[in-house]
Image 1 (tube, helix red, strand yellow):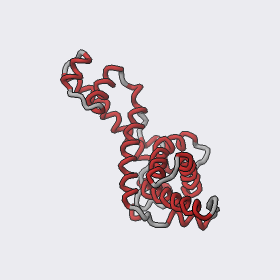
Image 2 (spheres, rainbow, N blue to C red):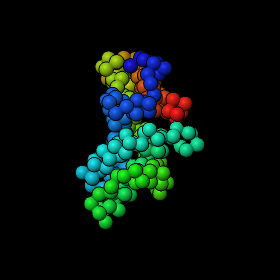
Image 3 (cartoon, rainbow, N blue to C red):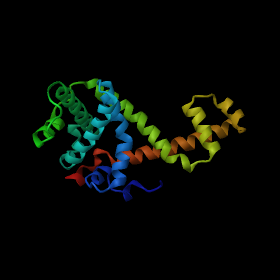
Image 4 (cartoon, helix red, strand yellow):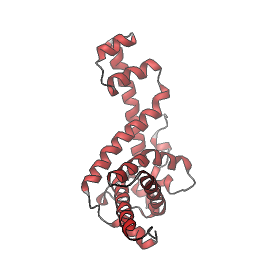
Length: 208
């Protein structure tokens, strides 16, 4: 948990190795629920939304070698959002015309390059990403803190209870509540920064 980001290769580099189970597990933990929610908002049924999420990750696995981290072309999340949206469009069209798309190379390139026709989906994708990332990071660091420390953070920072009320309930001073909350928030922030450093477009030189 305390590894510096310089000791771990970029998540984007690691995703190029289909055998790196840890990289793909982290990736799917973060982005799986986002793709699923996006599909549901676009009107897909539960089973189709789950299938769509799996298809998006297969598309990413096939396309990650060609991903261009040039900031001028947008962020990795923007790229992923376009793939998801275009696969949804393809699936909805296929449901009206054919059972399934072919998934060949030309279709793959179309899915990557076609502009996102619904900008609001990209914005919502970003909002949901931040929420999911916060939850994921909190789950990752939870075991590093005592029960009282975590409760001080959770009750004030997540449940929104007044610090004085939390202090009385936990048998500690208000200052201690703020101190414990600050420690957890700082740790969560480092975990998020760690993840985003690995998956950021700062890996441009490595990916070329």
